[in-house]
Image (cartoon, rainbow, N blue to C red):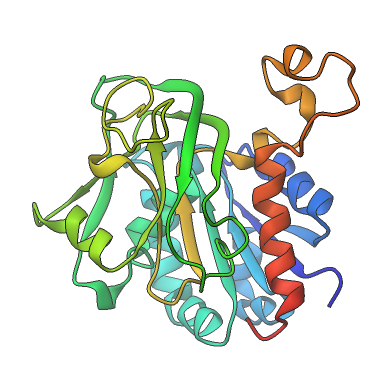
Length: 268
């Protein structure tokens, strides 16, 4: 399978679907973008894809909370279909608002974890957009992370409700123990941090993304699709004055790693 089929699921208020589609295409995937209503009308559409991606934005205006309405629609109409999709080897990715959706559906952290979580307002009390550093969690068994082990990625972040909270105060520690932390905000020395601005929302243990126990469902707050070309980085001319030796942008590396894992193991 040279070009894994990827579904980008958009809804009213989604505004990162085109960038996300382009990122997957540059990484080598075959992409289709569909409105959520089409999937609601025909859940068997999922059978055509290996990956479902819920991109960033403000689905349904976030009028009842970030990702709440889209999560409710997916849970009530497609909950069983999405569960089967993952059980049969499909992958699900949620970026920013998509991460909020996955948490609110319960797909993350996952019902078997015993941890109930949500994403709430940043500690600083306002929307924050800035570049962040992410350390990759120790899950080489996950197709999302297997080719990113030991990496630190620098990608943009932009959100107002990105702080992970759990009903159990020990929830973040339990997520760690179950190896469900996919990405952490780290400082310039590569150490996990809760301090602003390296951690833009105050999420405990620096949690920036989660993965489910199967390793197939991933959500993260920062936006890898916003760093897929060298000149997306604000310092790109300083990092590569000649313009011909710039390393692969970290956002593109993320998508390439996923495509590589899927194509090297078609039954993943």
